[in-house]
Amino acid sequence: MKTKRLLFTFTIAFLGFLMPISVNAQEKDQPLMERLKNRVVKQKTERTDEIEARLQEIKNMDMSELDGPEKRALRQEVKEIEKTTGAGGGVYISVGGLLLIIILLIILL
Image 1 (cartoon, helix red, strand yellow):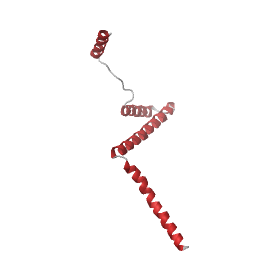
Image 2 (cartoon, one colour):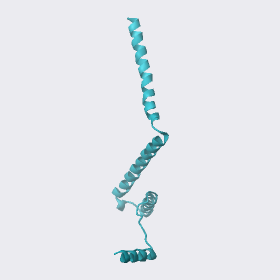
Image 3 (cartoon, one colour):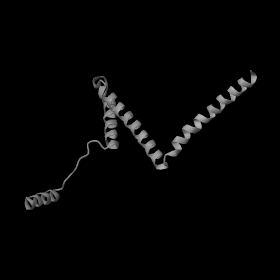
Image 4 (cartoon, helix red, strand yellow):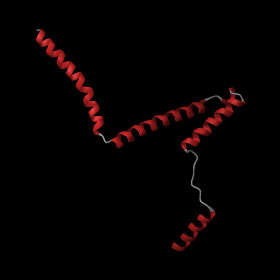
């Protein structure tokens, strides 16, 4: 009886130590660049979710209850978030570039 119990205990202990090693081995089977890429993507999505939640929180605030400096601080925060995310950017074409495109279209068509 004691032998079976001892054997059972060792088996459970061995499997308990083996499982974390196998999970870690699966992660190490991936190339380093792929693991880093997955980690960066995960961090970016987490940060994006945080930013979106904060913007939604600001949007849902009742601005009539806030005084001037608090409103100004919130506007500054929204502007900073937009700068870091690159929101509101666009493609700018100079006048010379626009003329060149029009001339090329006239020639080709």
